[in-house]
Amino acid sequence: MFTVRSSILKTLISSNFSKFKYFSTLNNEIKVCIVGGGAAGFYSSQYLLKHLPNTQIDVIEKLPVPFGLVRYGVAPDHPEVKNVINTFNKTAQHPNFKYYGNVSLGKEVTLDELRKAYNIVVLSYGSEIDTLLNISGEDKKNFMSAREFVGWYNGTPGLEELNPDLSGEEVILIGNGNVAIDVARILLTPVDILKKTDITEYSIEALSRSKVKKVYMVGRRGPLQAAFTIAELREMLKIPNVQTIWRSADFEGITSDTVTSLPRPKKRITELMLKSLQEAPKASSDDKQFLPIFFRSPIQINGDSQVESIDFSHTVLKNDRAIATNDVEKITGQLVCRSIGYKATSVDPSINFDDKNGRVVNKHGRVLMKDSTEIDKGLYVAGWLGTGPSGVILTTMNNAFQISQTIIDDIKNGELNCDEKKPGFDYSKFRAVTWDDWKKIDEKEVECGKKLDKPREKIVSVDEMLKLI
Image (cartoon, helix red, strand yellow):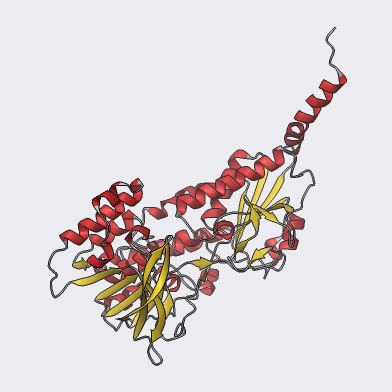
C-alpha cells in the first residue's frame, strides 16, 4: 500500500496550491481594462489574449482614434514603422477585445469605477507634456516644443492651429534625439517627396512656402553621447540638396583608438559622423544646411516678443555630465523647437503618481499604493507611463509583454485573486467610439488620401470624426 507522510503531503499541497488556484481562476472570465490605445495598450492586449485564457479586454482611449504615437508621433516619411498597425488590427479582431475611444480616464470615468468593474486595470496612456528648459524667454512667440511641431504636421487634434512661422531662414532645435532629427528632416526634405506621405495637407502648404535654409541641432554633450540613432542620421545625410556641416572642434580627442573601443552601435554611428565630417562636399549656394552642434547648453532666449537668438554656454564633460563654462555663444534663429523629453501627468487623483519624474510609482509594473511600499493588487502600468519616455516601439513592445507576463505570473502564483466575477463597465452612457466606428473614420481618411495621391489624409477635428459614426 502506497503511503505519504503528513509532512510531505503538506509540502506537496503547499507547493501546488497556487497552480491549482491558477487553473481554477482560468475557469472564470477575467475582465481587464487597459487605459490607453497606443502601442503599449495594444501590445499588452495582444500578449494577454494569447497567453491568459478567458480574458475579456476593454481598451479605452481619450481620442476617438487608436494607435497613439504610432499614428501621431512616427514621422510621415517612415511608413514602414507604422506597419505595426497591421498587428494591432489583428488584435482588435479577437472576439474578446473591445475598443472604446473618446473616453477619458479622470473625465468620463474614474479609476475607482474601473477598479470596481474589472479584475485588472493596466494604465498605459503614455507621456504627453514637455520637459521644460526653465530658462528666460521660453514663452516667446515661435518658441515651441518638438512634440507640438510633430503633432502639427502629423494631424494631432488640437495642434492644427499651431501655425509655426517658417518665414525665417534659421531654425534651432534644442536636443539631439530622434525627434529632433525628425523635425530637421521634415523642414529640409523637398516638399515633392513629403507630398506622397500621410503628412497633413495644411502642413504641406506651409512647408511649400517655407524660407528655412539652415537647421541647427544643438546638444549639451558630445558626439559620443548623441541620442539619435544611426538610421536617423543616415536618412539626414541622404536628403537631396542638403549639406550636413559638422564642427571639427566638437570631435577633438576622438581618435581611432577611441572609436575602436566603443560598443558596436556607438562605434558605427561615430564612424558615420567622422566619415561625414571628412567627406563633406562643397556646398552649392542653393543647398540647405543641417548643422549639428555639440557641447552647448541654452541659457537664455533672446528677442522682444518673438525669438531672435539663443545664448548657449560652452560645456565640458565631467563624469559624462555636461558642465557649463563661462564661454557663451549666440546662435540666431527665428523658430526654436525644444526637444529634451516628455513627462506624463496624473489624470486621476487615485493614481499614485511621481510628479517630479512624471510617471506612475511602480515596482516592475506593479503600481504601489499611495504613501506605501505595498503593491496595489490588480493595478499595473505599462509603457512610458511607468518607465519614463525612452526607447523605440520595440522597447515599448518588450515592456508591455513583460508587464503582461507579470500579470499572468501574479495570477498563477496566487498573488492576484481573480475569482470575483466583475461586471465590466457600461460605456453606452458616453459617446464612445467602437472599433467598427473607427473603421468608418479610417475608410474616410484613406478615401480622401487617394484623391491627393497619398496613403491617407487624416481628419484632425474630433467633431468631424464623430460626425462620421
